[in-house]
Structures are given as structure tokens and as C-alpha cells.
Length: 144
Image (cartoon, rainbow, N blue to C red):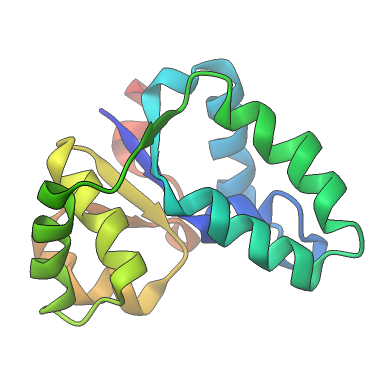
């Protein structure tokens, strides 16, 4: 199973007020076996922008915390025409363009999008391609 990591997960690794045990478990697994994870290329830009806005030392945290993960084996998927077309289907279900890219990547990779975005998760719940980490880790996590 490929796990697609939402920016909302990564931000919880570095924003003290947002910390969550499920996010910490994801980080632990990413460090142990990065090949099990993927992100769309917009992930880095989203995380960077929010860290600069909310963290007192956002650039340092991004450089020391996110860049090594991005260079450590995590699949960084580019935006392609094919992904854009797949994402458009999720936009029509009510997701933002950003969230639709995460959902489309999870669908394309036959994986699961890990997110803390309850609204987005609910909009595509019937698709069975997302998991709301505020409810804990997915059952399949034990086998990843």
C-alpha cells in the first residue's frame, strides 16, 4: 500500500499546537521506510508556505525537517495532464484543487490519502481512498 501524505499531516510534525499521535506515527514510518509514501509536488510548497506563516523559524524547520524527507526516497509525483484530469473528478465532488491532487494521486497509485481534513475526507468517503488520521491509524497500517 502506498500512503499519500497530506500537508496537514506534515505540519503536525512541526507545529506544537497541532501535534497528534497519528501524525507522529506517520513520520516514524516515513523515516523507517520512505518508499511506502508519496506526495504530489505541491506538498512541499504547501508545507513551506504554512511553516513560514506559523512557525517562528519556518525556513530552518523546512530545511532540516522536510527537505531530507523529500530527498530520502519519498515518491514526489509531478503534476501531469493525466493527474489533472483525474483530479478534476474530485473537484466535481467538492474538493479544492489542492486536495483533489492528493486524492487523484492516491487513486492513481491505488493507495490511501492520509489527511486531517475532515471535510475533504467526508466528501470522498465513498471512494475509499482517504483516511482521517484524527480517528487514528488505518487498520492496514500494521501491515505497511
